[in-house]
Length: 233
Image 1 (tube, rainbow, N blue to C red):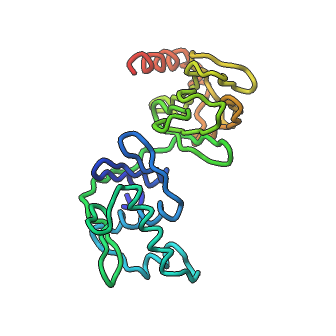
Image 2: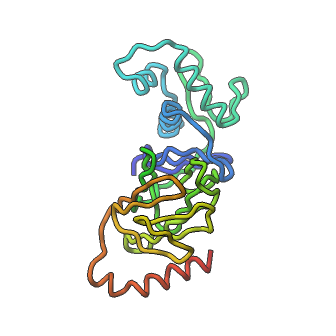
């Protein structure tokens, strides 16, 4: 597994290189795309320092930019990490050369993405187990539309097969599948089905379609297992 494809843990932070999400204490920290790329480059290269030229080539290939551009991106990452240039805990300035990530980091392979939820032009990865959806910043899928509740819905992907169940979490404006309102009882959702959270329209793309005849025969058992997972949560 490449070091550039991992989940990095350092201090109070976790950075998922696949979803490009920086989290501290369950709360996501905003980073621009360039800042996400810079953080990932420094994490993957650690403990080696990257030269300014290496970073320019990676962040702005075949484009001339001012030296202040890189300094601004470094400052953005430091602000997100609560870091200080003079007494840096995470991003160390190598004077006359570049930058390095200076804190001990634990990394692990990223979880397998079993499906994608597409909403508002953005794709959100879905993983095995329960994927919460809502405006709460610690949701697996954070949707900021004002018609969406903080804890709106959940998509559960069953162990062993890419089978998705959707349930509403007593949201204010409801969850709909192909125009039909659903409740707290898990409902099987098909590939490319239209899902509406409040006024936000979404669709789901399942990576591997495995709804076969044998699977359909086992559907009651799958529903029982999902209900058991919900009861244990």
